[in-house]
Length: 237
Image 1 (cartoon, one colour):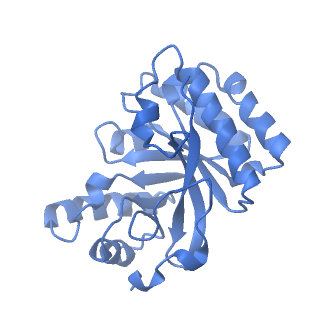
Image 2: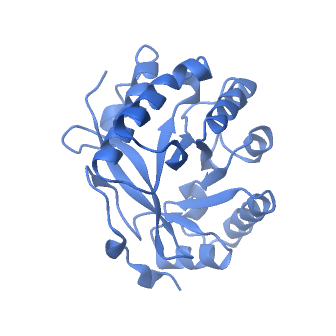
């Protein structure tokens, strides 16, 4: 299994103008890109890597004094049995004295989910334990309205393909705003990720999106937490 560390990128509450939480992102041991680590993941080490990421994210977050939401990615196809696969997470949280209700698991996968019913069992188990569950990369190739219909999640994260240049493409804007409206009607939180320009942020703010993540507001920081004072709130109109 590859060596790795964690970077933390803020998720900003643009209504309250404060950091809502942080997503834990894999980096190489010297801060190398996520791809340098993920390229070493295969069928044989997928489960061990998934478990190690959860444990390291929790311990790093606790050591840095994180007292807000912590988002951790997990690979649904690596989870063979929900109750068994959550044990290391529970043990890490207990050891680090990190509250379970601060943890959000983000369902992320670069391949199609093979068993939606199995994934819903995972989600149900996690939510029963006090975790929140989010559907990552919403609007990308594998995560769309069909997934939202089949899976009972607390939040979705709009993929960057829906966000990038949303102010310049009326068709893209109409589709994205429609997805946001559906989620709002279903009482599902919306996080817009990949926001890089003030114009994109303005469209999302006007649509009622509350949570934003992207280089415009903050880049991931390796082994540290970006503070509220570092967020350029002047971009929020």
